[in-house]
Image (tube, rainbow, N blue to C red):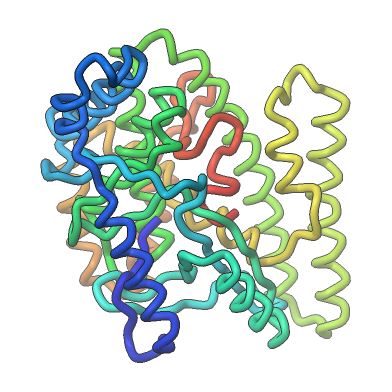
Length: 369
């Protein structure tokens, strides 16, 4: 997740102030992991030392083996005293899946707005809903300043399974390797593809975690497939020449069917849905366009980008994407669509998974879904 810490003229002074204060509060609390290890001595505890050393091994692997940026990001830890780092608001029109965009210096235009205060995020989400938008409010357990500052690991992340921490680091560093202002779907799809590509390589050094990662990939693939199928149905409805009331009725039916189908499958096949309660929390609520659009941002271009990473490696793919930056949005989407079509079907049995949240919360809360 990318948070524009400096807001442009389209943002209010209040939003600018909370972003700067919240970001500064994170940065001043950073504790370098190396310093903790050196100064902790016996009082640090064997388990704490093991976890911190593992975090540094993951960080070194990201640069040495994957070619991700080598800097001070994810070499420090911050304890905010809470699980959430920020809260994110996503919105769409009532009869469209095109997300509202907000524009910031450095980060460009993105399809979500981040807050360090839950109450402020709730107020903004309520105002958008009052204006007739479909709105989704979620929390984020990490964020990226795109390399402007040395982003930290947050204390709750150190309790995650090590492969999930690795996935997080790979995802967030990918934002520093490539970021195109104004194209959230490309930026997040690229970071997700790098996360999967890197995690596959990391798991060769951590074979004990492969089973859990594979299981998470299957759950994630099932979730994304269901949501994107509903997205295609909704797209067709919104593009049709129908009166608004008929579009609203069809939208309601599609979203209710999406939730009902998952909940029925999860109930009747509990052995196949061991993390059902987590996904149930996503499906067991009134869904809207904003929920659907947020999922698409993280998965839309992953198949093609992952295939190219496996074929060409990180540097070559970044070069290709930088070239795409000069394309119009339509031209860029056409190229990315072609890459998706060229990619072989992804095998959920072998894919490592796309996880940057604690076990059982596969980006549903951590990335505003």
